[in-house]
Length: 109
Image (cartoon, rainbow, N blue to C red; front, side, top):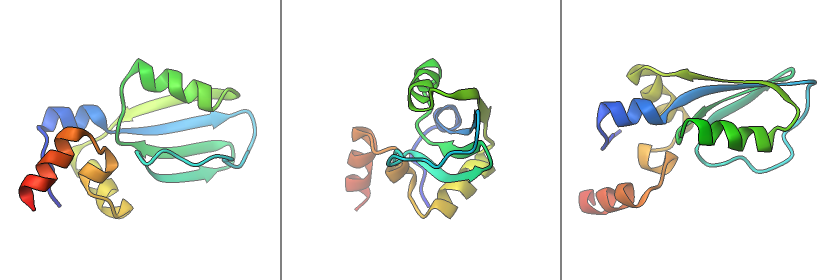
């Protein structure tokens, strides 16, 4: 697995996310490709966001889950990021397909 980003950029971009809803509810929409390893346990939805953008992400999640009681974001260690991407079966670029990553992949090919 190849990560073609600086460590600080990579750790800024990945967050563990927990969304606590008022009650247990199935997800009724297609999830963004940047949400890795999603899971539901009772009224809590957890996933790894590989495209975290601070306040913008918080606003987007509040729009997706308007009945959320709480939305929390936790920074991840490099080891946790590596394991999450490896377990999701995606490359770092697939988790966040920006133009820069696509260009890097083509250069590596």
